[in-house]
Amino acid sequence: MTIELKMVYTGSKSLDRLLNALGSDRARELSRDAMRPAVELIAEEARRSAPRRTGALAGSIVVRAMPKRTNGRIGFTVQQRAGAFKGQQYYGSFLELGYMSGRRRDRIEWRVGNETLKQIKLAGVRVVEENESGGWVRKWRRSKPEEVFESRRAERNPRRKIEGIWFMRDAALTKEQDALTVYYEGLGQLIEAEAKASGND
Image (cartoon, rainbow, N blue to C red; front, side, top):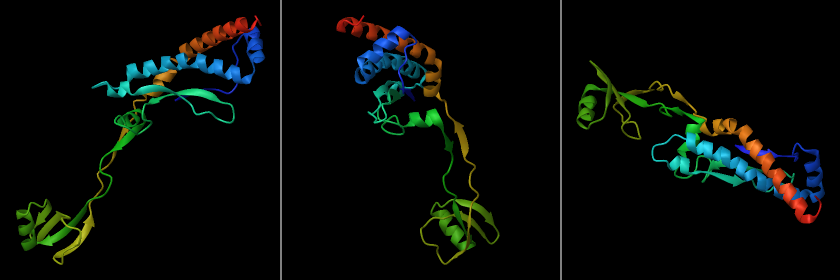
């Protein structure tokens, strides 16, 4: 999740004039300085609401500056320290976004005769279905033996959708207004301090 500013406005005409007088580079620096504590509010809420057993997932949530971009955008992201689906807390992304539970591939089964069935039962191969002429067993080797009469693809176990918890997204929505308030107030203070230091107040 990312807070981005494409254009900087403070909500105050006087502060906007002072900000514009600073030049674009300095204005971006002040905006970035004001933005970090605002985004930290969202990060704190994400840590508080993260699923918790050991606390490792909550502890991996950090604020990172976005890479510098040629189009002038600045911002910060609230993310896991190693990134999405990475590191020891990779599971955090699955918890956030959701995932599919269940087998990924169908199971191959072979139909064999009675004698082969007896032998593979002794070997511990799982018997799926048994009848008078033999039965169906799970594929137990790479190449199909001659005594296998036919093969079939077992029905896929239905994969169950596990919905995401969205604790990161909800943290951003919950703290959005508080973060904006902190940002605007902090930016105003920084602009006023900069103006006084440069004698433009």
